[in-house]
Amino acid sequence: MITNCLLLNAHFRNRKSKKNNMKIITICFVLIVFIVFSSCRQRITSGRSIIDIETAFRNSQLLLATKYADSVLNSGCKDSMAIVKLKSLVDMATRIRADFNLSENEIEPRLKKEFGEYSQNERTIWEKNNWLEYKIIDGEKRYFNRAVSNLKLILSNRQSKLKDSSGSIPDQFSLFRMEHIRKVIESGKFDGKPVLPVKMMIIYRLTVDADAVPDGEIVRCWLPWPREVHDRQRDVTLVKTIPSNYFIAPDSVEQRSVYIEQPAEKGKPVIFELYFSYQSMAQYFDLNKLRIAAYDTTSEIYKKNTAEQQPQIVFTNEIKKLSDSIVEGIKNPLEKVRKLYYWINDNVIWTGALEYSIMPDIPGYVLSNRRGDCGMQTLLFMTMARYQGIPVKWQSGWMMHPNHVNLHDWCEVFYQGVGWVPLDMSFNLQNSTDLREKEFYITGIDAYRLIVNDVISSKFVPEKKFYRSEPYDFQRGEVEWRGGNLYFNQWDYQMKVDIKEP
Image (cartoon, rainbow, N blue to C red; front, side):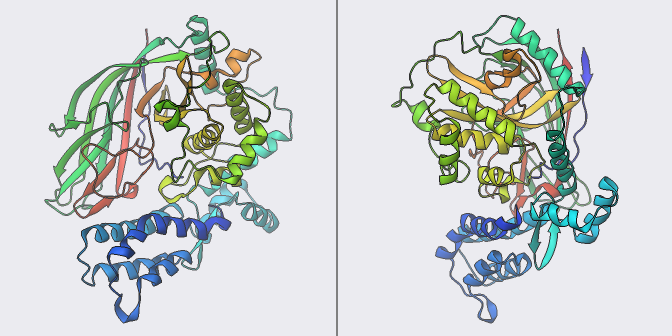
């Protein structure tokens, strides 16, 4: 069977609450800009100091902070590292404004189109609970560009909890997954041996906007490339790239890419294309039939994958208290994992996300708002599991299901004596009375995946010079030139997939 899947165009992964505004701006500022202050202490014109930049960011005065940063850049600072960091600060302000790009006048017709007439009291409740997400930026209320669609998801979820949804009709995607899950389980391979191979043929295209880069300047591009260390992802074959000169990062690089570069031409978009194929397979572990040994807490696998990883995997007091309450009295690692999975499944709903680069504490955001996309839910699970002494690592790339091709994040849990076992947090518990089917995504994975990353925040080869558009994950690509990073609003991406099944 050959299935022509959709073209994905300029699909922002759009990843705070009002009460987190000051915290978010402050932490982003500290992470990206503080180093600059220690190395480039020139004063800004008209008596302004570096402190003014910090104050402007803390007060969400992004235009003013950008103006002050530009003044430093134009005041004779010679420190190349400082210049890069200050440009990253200006870039961060652009990212925040890009996510919160809707005014009150622009959000109003979208709300009416989706919900019809609504009362001011309803609107007040939506905003007070941060269901209709906004920030005060430069003195103006600015709404998240996916605020309306997320509000619809939140209200729909709340309504479904008030009703008996046991008789609801599953959608086609759920039916497809369940049929596939049953085939995986029926294969009899309960020890993780890959089954049900599917061949994927990919055309990936990244298009930089015309004149985003000056004529003649070299555009540097990193495109996602499959990892080859996994039994369930095999036979990776490059067909061609456009332009034809390329460099594939070694498989030891845990966020793997194909690097291509070419000069910009005035008035023309800069296009990079990647043609390749690979075979993907499913895995299922019935851990009730496999012996799980006690963890070797001295091993490198255990120490690395139970550790905190700033800034997104941090054992805050909230994480400690909540995870301890969820797994109280449980010693078995599999039972701990099940408890954590069930809690997130029952208490966190899927919504479109802000860009991760402007979120200093993703698990904290999820807990505060009880919502998040696949990666946000996964980071929450990973943080709680690691705190409980369970080794878990990030995994991500794309979900490649027919007619549902999209960016996607999941993870793998390490069980001593068994190895790495996949877990997909946001695919949730399945609607089945068979416990193996219901809990499939706690110890299994379907065959429709593209694995690009096995960690978060890994350096590229060759290394990127400027702060990445997505500093933690890598799926869409990354682009820069000698003048700086090119953010997501300066380029589009598309993936075309042909799926061949036996």
